[in-house]
Image 1 (cartoon, rainbow, N blue to C red):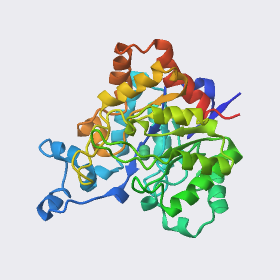
Image 2: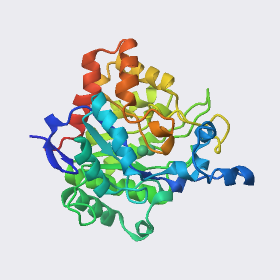
Image 3: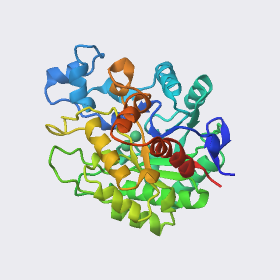
Image 4: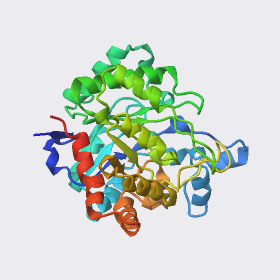
Length: 357
Ligand SMILES: [Zn+2]
Ligand SMILES: [Zn+2]
């Protein structure tokens, strides 16, 4: 029997139910903070959210410090409960040390909502790495991850059930920061030793319209394979950022288990990086998913609303954790997706991915 390790203990993978494999239930991504150059705007961006400024926050989310931290667990519980009401059963939380992971809060969310919550191990992009990562070897980092998967996190006895999101940053010409390559190699070894699912956050460039995406996936996969990772247990996050489905098709041909379209609802811009830079709108991401379905890949696609920073929450003008069930699945059905294909993407694929044994 395959089992999935949740924050309240192992469950039969058959009981997992509808799952989003990439969410943040609390978050601290101050490592991404990019203040406005204009001092008056920078001062305003230290302030509270209001209806009058939420539009500006959505154009430049990285400039607003309060957008980058969401540690109000009561808010999470309220909004996650809506995901449960809409039909969801499980969430894979990919917060990691250095970006706000708190397994006690995850347990509380699971208890109060009745959802299966899965915690993760590993490290995100180098800017978020806790300082001790620098002095550790690949094998030492792999040992830490294996311990969190097999024994528990920070002495709590709460075991991780997933590895990642392993952060790979750098600009289009750079596949990673040196410390990120080390963590990627360690994550591959931890996957090989435990059989756990593993996800990577690629160095996705926030494209402007018409720009050709650059990717380093073959290099990432070479490293993972060399370190013994079972690519069938790998899911690559954020494929919505790549507007050409030949890229995910290439990943699947190389043996990657699943490609994740998880930015539904993330319709914000990051104009501190440049005009027009930002996340892919739902209209385009729905189109990409439909192309993957029509190419016969519904058995390799995951769907999700990566609620992360504050503007993703309904309370702050977003569409929340329930967005996929409430808005995206009806949209996919209207585009021609069948119930069997939707069941595959929401239930069967996560079960095969996260079930171990
Ligand atoms: Zn994420
Ligand atoms: Zn990410």
